[in-house]
Length: 77
Length: 77
Image (cartoon, rainbow over all chains, first blue to last red; front, side, top):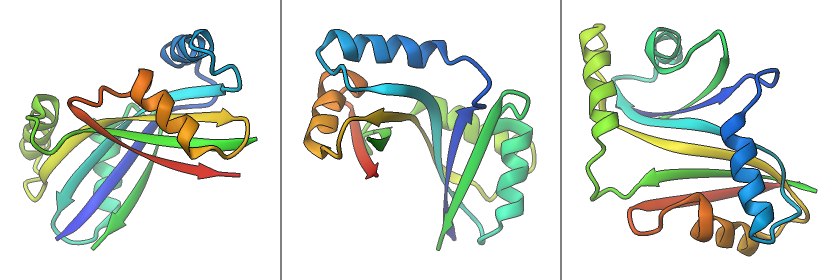
C-alpha cells in the first residue's frame, strides 16, 4: 500500500480567473504583497503498490485535463 | 519574495462526496486498488517575505473554512 498525492494546476499559459478573484479578495483584506496566485486541485489516495506510471495514467484518463492542466505526483510507502 | 504553497483538505471526520464519486469512477475504469480518495484545494502564490503566520492568517480569513477544513503551508524562498 502506498499513498499517492497529486497536485493538478492549470498550465501557466491558461488564465486562472478563480485565482485572480481570490488574489483581489486578499488585496482587499489588506494582504497587498500577494501576487501570481494560482488555484489548483489536490487529490490524495491509497494505491496498491508504488506504481508511478499507473497513477500518471489515472491522471491522464480522469483526474486531470491534460490539454489545460499539468499534474505532479508524489508517491510514499 | 517567497513562494507559498497551501494544501486545503476536508477534515477527516467530514464526508467527502466528491472524493467518493471520483474513487467510484476510477474503480469503473478498472483501477480497483484505489481507496481513501480525498479531494482538496491547492493554492500557490508569491508573498513578500517568508512569513508563515501571515499566510496562516490568510488561510483562516479567506482561503480555507477552518470549521470543516484543515490546511498545511509550505514556504520556500
